[in-house]
Image (cartoon, rainbow, N blue to C red):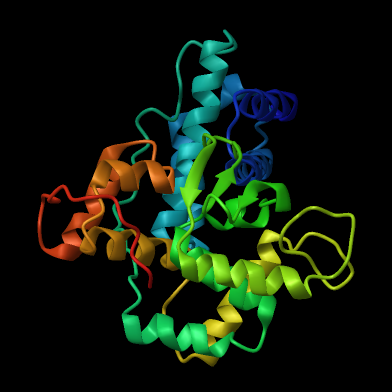
Length: 285
């Protein structure tokens, strides 16, 4: 089964699945294979629904969250579906294994008081000031921000070029004056290097996603903001633009949502199910 898992991971990579998703699938399946080996099972054809139910129960016993268990079951179901499509199996033992029910926490939207406090907390760190402002003023994903190159920025035309990122399409994102000023301020003090990544370390290496996340979380704590994550800056951007009357179709394209329905979910924070069409004008937070 280990060889089949390796082929499955290669299949996911070939089909452009996000690197974080591929890593999670690999870890989930490794965990399953270890569990099955304790039962003396090493062949996919020998796996039964009961074995998978036992694995599911072991996760509960080890206090995994219901959300984590559900994600692991997704990995397992996808794996066996792949084996069927490849002709290695005729039926999946995972089909009748049910997902545990859990409530999805609503997006965390920062209040103006909170995001102003965050902005104040980073004002003396020019790099983090640039990062926070870009996330707040553009709604970029953290991976998109980490991958920004100097040549992707056009201050004259007031937009960023977002390159195709894993399963996300390339697009242009408008820059408001606050975002432009933050970029200009950072670039003036940015370490001299041949590296063209916008946000870099003092030694000229790219500022990695995990380090950006850690740094933003640190400033959340300094600002006294609880229960917030980096992606909540993106959520906040979307809601504030809807409040400002940015047309929902334009906004959906701006933030790179694949489906308009994803953007429409944010209308709940406005207490409405419709967005009145207005002229495109990006609000400054």
